[in-house]
Image 1 (cartoon, one colour):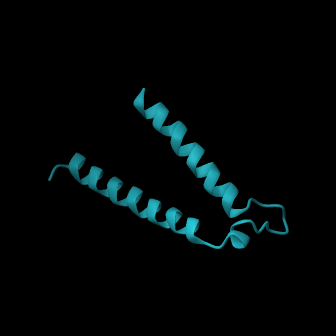
Image 2 (cartoon, rainbow, N blue to C red):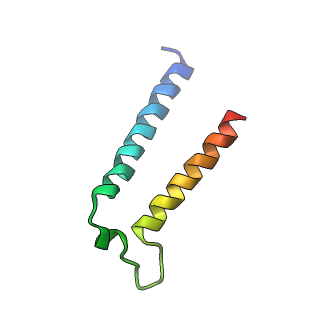
Image 3 (spheres, rainbow, N blue to C red):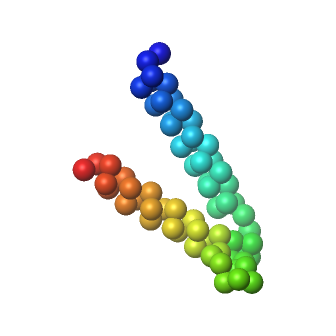
Length: 64
């Protein structure tokens, strides 16, 4: 396999692993996803929304 082919395989596995980890959070109970840390950090739902929006805009840029 070429270096480019190896890179594609590694990237594909990393993306798949990241998706699996993020996707699991959607099965978490709502009250857990809505918990806000004492330091006013983001809730899990806010992080998931941010990931979704970021992924969308990155795909728009990649298509260009």
